[in-house]
Image (cartoon, rainbow, N blue to C red):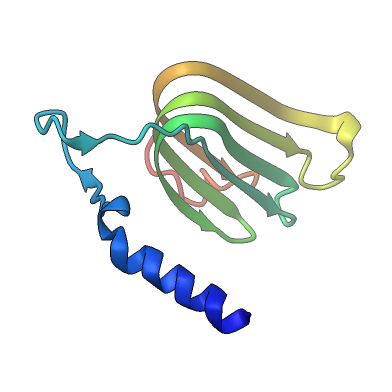
Length: 145
């Protein structure tokens, strides 16, 4: 009985070979009418956090829900200074934040500077932050002012 069922299946395949068509999908551009174009939705996310405990400062950048995102960051930090450059070109949501506390106490109540930026839409950002310890200018770090 099993042999008869297998034989009947083989006969159907042999008798009706034209039932199964071979289909090839073509990928390409809009100029090819046979090509299939895929539409997909993608979002990019990127975040960075910096803490310089010697200076009692922190910085953060975050990009979310971005349909286009191109970023470059330059960072140099040591116990006396932090140099941070952020370049970004994006469509989406961008947040940049900086918090600088008193380097001697580190107390949140003695906040020296707080900067928060929020961008929603299409933006290009060129941000440069230089934080130096007290009296660094007198030592010649910043050069002539």
